[in-house]
Length: 262
Image 1 (tube, helix red, strand yellow):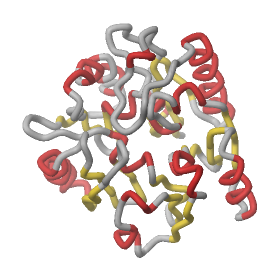
Image 2: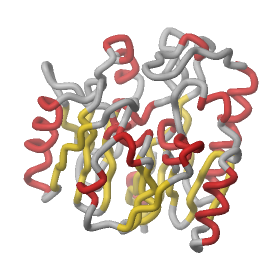
Image 3: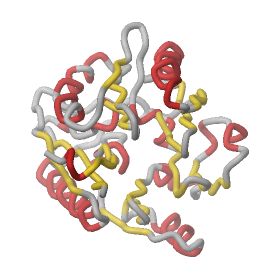
Image 4: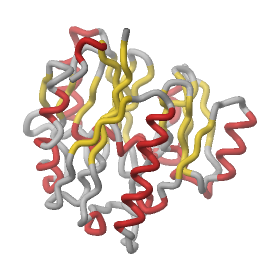
């Protein structure tokens, strides 16, 4: 038997000081963010995940966005080297938890890689070449995973923080996108669904088991996907959208054998 684990991390009291690349800074309500984070965790639990919360670090305003610190695959975990120097401290707060379940390999200098740039579709890993992930990091990822049979496919991203800011999987054959930010021809083998132009951030959604989680405010995208038969679950993450984040950013989901549960 296997258990679906979802690693999460508490919200920093300094989240209002989060890093921003393509958005103007807005006021973030910390108590409301904590409340929304709790409801996000409840949704993961309701969809069958064992939710584990790691402690926050008030020295790291972005620490709840732990997706960027590691890529956890079935066979191994890749510990990243964030492109943002100030976010590299976050990695040490996540690695010990991951090492309970996986052997790890690491991205080293001069490579940079953030988990938000890695979209997995079966054995294909589409990796954004972005302001946070460079070509050296992608090549290190390719070499680290060669023995496991993954195909690593670089995708240049322009005008968005990460690839998964504008492109996530609805299932192993269908991708929700805002393709204004990358070349959609790279996904010629997949069915693409475009988000409405005024709901670009809806392109970051989170698939957990058979549920597809999306921010409650993206009503046009919700209606579009429900009409196509997807099991849509909604949660309000409005405070985190102000931090240039999305649903995938706040968890690292993976399966593990029951005997490995700590």
